[in-house]
Length: 236
Image (cartoon, rainbow, N blue to C red; front, top):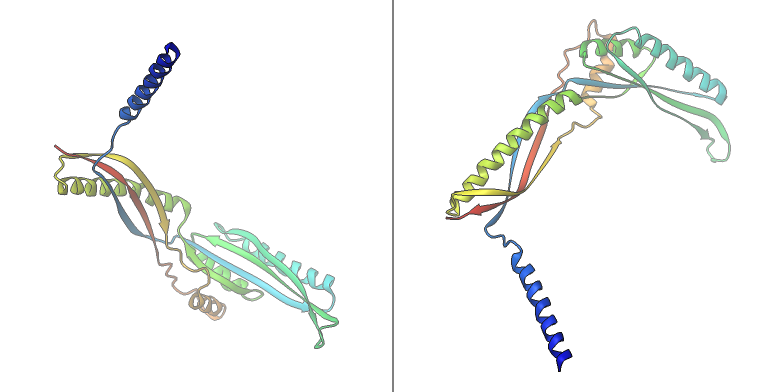
């Protein structure tokens, strides 16, 4: 009897402790999920050009040597122009076969040179000069990282302000006087221009025959920031 009383008392104590911990949990009411988005158009301030050389030879060693000479000549010419970032791109060689597909009759090799600059005119003129020995693989524009970061930093502030404005509107619509932010997430993205632009490639290919490089319009890129989260409306 004594043991049973002790067990019952202990059980009641545990139940009481558990119940106390449950009721101690804060109950959250009047939560609202919402989001706000802000965006702006940013001028693309970087120009990217990929040029390539492609040739064929029965002797793979001779083919590689020819490709290397062409690349080295292009790099040497490009280094003479200020403010141009230069790098080598992909380089691939592969065999070509006879009609029966049994024997290798020659080898083809393709190698790229990649150029990037904020000086569109200088890069356009250099591209025109290099078209004497190379071909245009792609030409596109982008927003530089410093410019993107500057815009995104401002958009983050604007997105938070827009979120708070919508939160206040939601609170007032529910008859509340104020609100508390429960959770807030900030995400940024931009709409990229495809890297392969046929009209611009055609312009670039005509540069070699033009007296001067044509006017280049880099266009703009949309950058946006979304603020989404949840609030708790404070009712009177």
